[in-house]
Amino acid sequence: MKYVFATMIGLLVLATPGFAQTESEVTMDGAGWTASHPLYFMDRMMESMQLAFAFDDESKAQMHYKFAQERLAEAYELKKQRQERLAEQALGEYEDELDETDQVTETAVARGRNVTALIELINENFYRHVAVLQSLREEASEEERARIDRIIEQTTNKHSAMISRLERETPVNFTIQVGNMTRTMMITPHMAEKFI
Image (cartoon, rainbow, N blue to C red; front, side, top):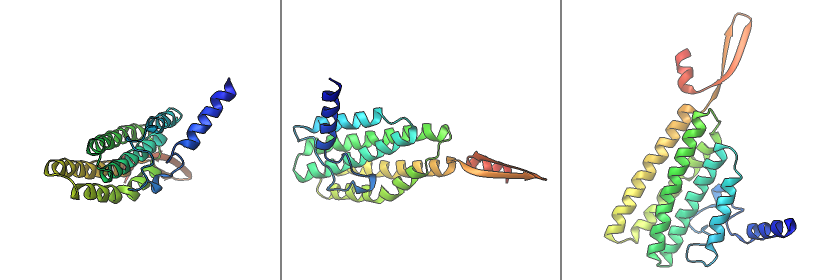
């Protein structure tokens, strides 16, 4: 029975498009299966499994950010297929995943975790997100444009806030030397300012 279960999991991993993609590969045309595909639920199930096996906050935040990118790519693809309702749903899920990224990141920073890789990931992809959203806006109705404008503004604000918080709170090595004694510790830049 264990072998059957392991084989099924292996087939799901191999059959799910986008599973092996890295964060930087997810682009407008990297949506993989979209909500219009009959096996889309398997893609989402794999995402849930990935999150379940992520044991640290930084990994979870990176996954949520990757999922946000995938939702945005799906929205773009669905819009090209003229599936407006599903594209709108994907955009809503994009916003939800960015919110999750922000919340998990805040927890990681509060716990003093090193989130440098997450800062790099967000910085690498921010302009791509805005470009995709602007592309979606060009083909949208007036009502949809207002919503996409709001999403662009919220995305910009959220990215800026995350980067600002991460850069301000990411632990750094701080060395204090008193006489012959030297101590090095990890503290946030905010705390380091108190010593300078």
